[in-house]
Image (cartoon, rainbow, N blue to C red):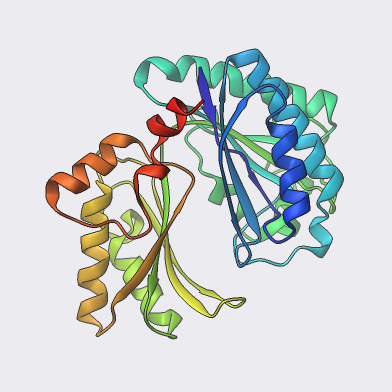
Length: 291
């Protein structure tokens, strides 16, 4: 069994999200769908055996590029494609070889069968993260390709402004988690993000940015925990709470995108730390048990 977590650039039209989800579930188990109107993005969690899972991913990506037009897309989440990111996830060290082989196979099929440019990231892309390709958005990525700085790993050289590119990767499990702040000042969220993310001296394995979500008026610290062992989620939550309190602000809520490994929830419970927005229904192993 493999896990995959495709992210698509549609989070506002339930009918479109449902159609894409149905396509992804063609021959794989769809465990979870998370849509956000501010990010204008949906994240699907799927599991399956390698060949059926790749077939489902091809069907879901094809449906996405049929129904989503990036030229009409407005959302706060960075993106370079309608089917923006498709990671194959290794849940243990032993699974990475299979995840990497599957990522290469998927990239080749997306390029040849769907005619979309594909860039590899993570364990199959020299360790590069999606942010490497998203810097400046789709227009900037197109200029980098035209200048010869980047070349798609599969598919055509041209980036269609309607569909963009697909970032296909192999990686270990990560946690996408957002904490909402009781303030209307996005500078506070940005200051906290700088304090907790690894790139500016914060916690190892943490990416973080501050966001103002215009549709709902919320202020978020939006985070990816790319190493769940180096940066336990409950310790990150406590760090954000402390940084917020130092600025006279409270954490008002949390939003988990996708599912979380059970050991993460158990560690938080053992430490006596509440994880806003996370409960047993959001645990990967329990979702697997329901299928």
